[in-house]
Amino acid sequence: MEGKKILIIDDEPDFVESVARVLEARGYKIDSAPSGKEGMEKAKIFQPNLVLLDVMMATKTEGFDISREFPKDEILKSIPVIIVTGLREKMNLPFGFEPDKTWLPVKVVLEKPITPKRLLAEIEKHIK
Image (cartoon, rainbow, N blue to C red; front, side, top):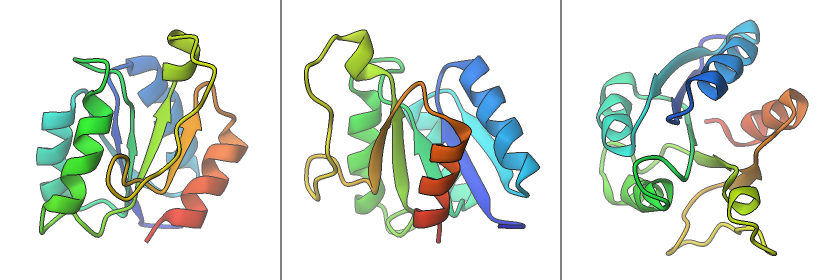
């Protein structure tokens, strides 16, 4: 996937650094943002081929909120979004989250911790 760009929107520096290392080793160009607002701004400039988005950042639902903003934005609406979250584990939820065109318009929801193999497989399946 030489030259494809991925934006990581996540406020956990260790997660961002470890995922960036894995993806850069596969030839992806990486940028990151620690918040949804900054991520939206960077996405317009960086024009990624895919976004990896955390849920819990400044608020417990920031990633969900941002995921609904991408399809509304003329510049960003075609960029596939993958949510990568530890929300289910942190909140001890008995259920996971499923993509939904209205409430959660993303390609897939992945639970942290995630193996590099699984993350790469999902990225390769959904990247444009």
